[in-house]
Image: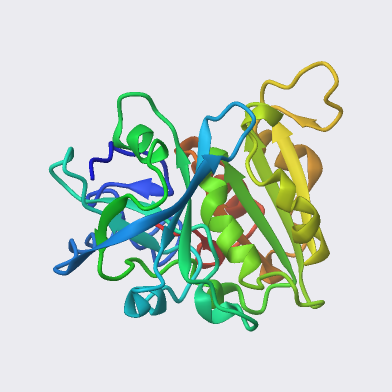
Length: 278
């Protein structure tokens, strides 16, 4: 089954771009090797994730792939795709929570948030139908968000832009932030509400203890919330009060992650408490 090349974002990377950082400013480690085992999984569902259909929800049915499901153990991990139209594997961040975090009935699928870019494999991925077979790696890759590094934080600042919200959904719905001992603020930036995914999940996320701060760079005249870019909204909204008890998680555009990292370090935060999933 032909798929097209996915968008190059922090949540969707080629092998040479996928890296594991010991901290936000650490040297890049070696990229993970391409999987030696591959399998085929059927598409379970495909539907628009935003009002303007710039992002799509894509789910794979993995009910017959127990070991692959079990290899997803942390939010922020990736699934490799081997596409006939691309000479190299590509990696999609899994947006659904790890199966082990679902106490009631563990999911039998992986969800993804895919940006539809005309002329790329992601566009064809968004055109698939239930039952179509997709070649994927036999296990997930990457360490995901190393949340143990901020296990003692009392305040956690989460920053996501565009489709970078995909692994953040996995993080939130795996139970992160539900402890009464921490306060979690999510700064989520997109161009406008028509491009903002997961709005239908906001109520659930807030019930889990997540404070959501939407930031629109090109809103309409009716918008009364934060305007501009995530890094600008953060500088207006909140400063790190106690750097020793604050952690941060970043996923999105390179400029945003770099500017936020600089601002947090300037506020006194340790680099080791600034997490990414790449």
